[in-house]
Length: 63
Image (cartoon, rainbow, N blue to C red; front, side, top):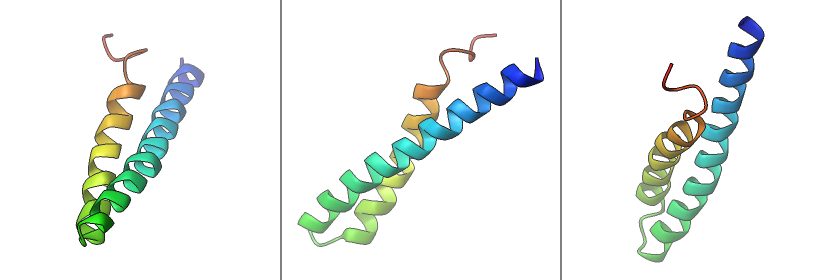
């Protein structure tokens, strides 16, 4: 059970990290286009963390 939990946590962490990188990059580019790099990157990081967490959850979220 603990190995399964570790694998699930590791998958969630990887999804969150990937989401932060992807959405953070997109947010930084979009923010840079309108001259708000910090705001764009911050928004991208927040969205990426939430999206990555939600995407990583379905396999074990219901039980």
